[in-house]
Image (tube, rainbow, N blue to C red; front, side):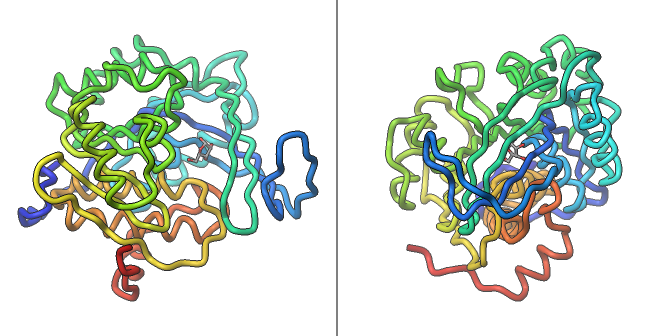
Length: 329
Ligand code: RIB
């Protein structure tokens, strides 16, 4: 991964970048509703679908569809969902040799409501995702060492994610942490010094207690996160406002979003983070990787579902050639 300074020209790669993703694999139970229900309210929805998801698996599929070599490390249960989830990942070209099937365990499940505006709410039962332990990661040290980047989220036990990070660091493998969901007690110090720390707006607020509604608020949040966790760069995903990258010195890089008709924003952030990681691992700088990531996130939001909504490389390139980003606010 090139130092993401936003200026240096990209060095072309001869081989596909290998991204190791350590994270969750869920079956998403998706109900389309006119609006998200209030506490205690029952609402009729218009449709129900069982779709493959999980932040880790979504990011693995995104990497594969965007042209990278994706190696998934995670767990599913020995149930019918686990079988479908593994088959689905394999069908996408993701290396699933390190996706374990846990006996007598259910697979992770996410119950998702998607409202007409595309916004969602998600409740998760972790199931087998909780069974990915630090010792499993230690056995896979050579797999992590061979990566061009390690991509992490936080739907697995924190000590497991922290172990993956430590192993990657030991071998000089660049690390990207999508801090979703934010742990109830905040992000521990074991997650200091990742190369890229990437929250969305609400996660940024949860992590810092600061508002994050505008680009300048995102820069202030990034400064606070740099002070606290010392990452190389903070990249704040701002949804329809685009994304803000800040390294604590010099100007922040504000990348506007693209206008789209959102159908389902589930996993749009996963598409963004995977695309950003892949392009940086390919040698792109931040100035090149951020618009690519915004385009991948925008395309994902135009489709229902998580893994299904991940765009292919050709789609992102076509989208970028055809669209102009919104003017920054
Ligand atoms: O980021 C979206 C994902 O969050 C869904 O696919 C769901 O499984 C939860 O993990």
